[in-house]
Length: 135
Image 1 (tube, rainbow, N blue to C red):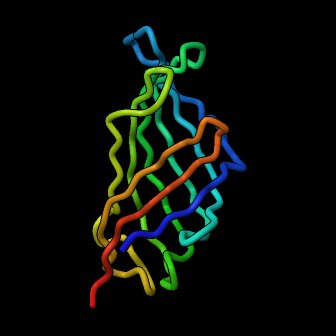
Image 2: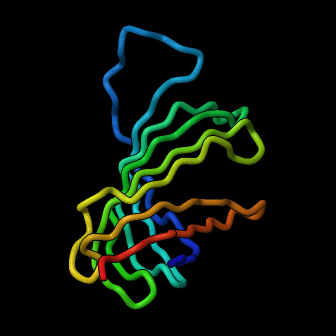
């Protein structure tokens, strides 16, 4: 089954990272995020976000682990999902999105699946989750 929605990021908080002894052209950063979802996917999440990103060029890659609480269609509960992507200044590539096995609770217990995130030119963030629940 597919659930779709949009989300906003009302909170983005960079986290200090100890400086390592290897220097690259693009530094690695860590942040926490809070997201709010609307649509067939409704609820909130907290995210641990890691990225190597050149803000001036809009080029980089991120990795995120997210904990979601809310509903997909009429099923409510919690689960984790991981996602990553690379941007070369315009668009995204190398997208990855997976629900963490055995992470679901309540009506989302046993959830499995994949999904994706897209961003419109105006900055609107879209999410879809293709999921299955045990019978």
